Length: 258
Image (cartoon, rainbow, N blue to C red; front, side, top):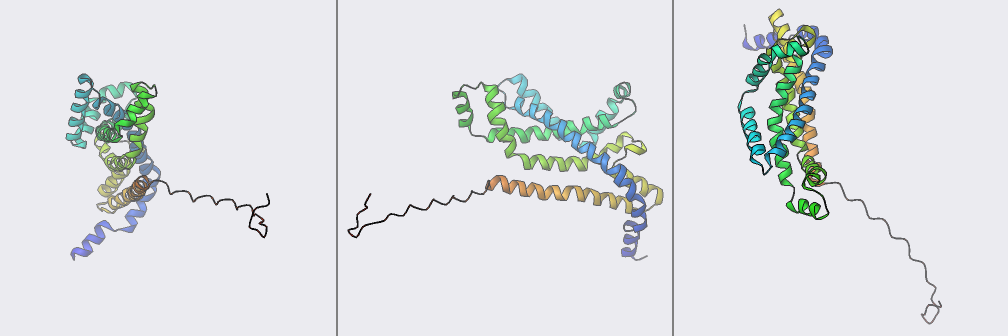
């Protein structure tokens, strides 16, 4: 067969896509968003703790944070998911039963925390030292100054990088299928993979890829817009018009009679 015809029949079978579409919308898309958003929120909390520990002057806080970051940034995401999902599976069975989602969320969160910790740390360190000194001069303790002055400014500066990490989590959520999912727990990639295995056609996998594009491309443009907005700041408000001067009636001599 002609290679182009083979490619078209293998990946662009509209009937296969139409058959997989309802399940991707009702099952795959909600599960993918649940995994990504849950991991982003938990990873942000852990990442902030890592960032604060990483800038601490105490070695027993700074070194563990550094080691954690190096390990989880160096391991492949698939290896981390298998390590957590399979290694802690007996504990998970005792706590919440045969549901791999909590362990999948935990694994993705630990991965995200390693990256978000560095992102938050860079944002905090980018705030001028004079801000901390000024807060301390006003009577804030070091913790209060960090919590109320420094960290909010640092987080605001790295919001685009945080959204980029959310995009990575949306794509990495496809690796949770390694843990074994029930029919109602499958995310987009797993549904596409199952349809491809059952029909011998890869069109459902292409449809899953289109769903990922629909999720990540708008977020990418939102990141670019947010980055430009943060760099440029808010547009200056137009100056208020000055009130009209009160007319002065001058006498022929040119003097104000008042």
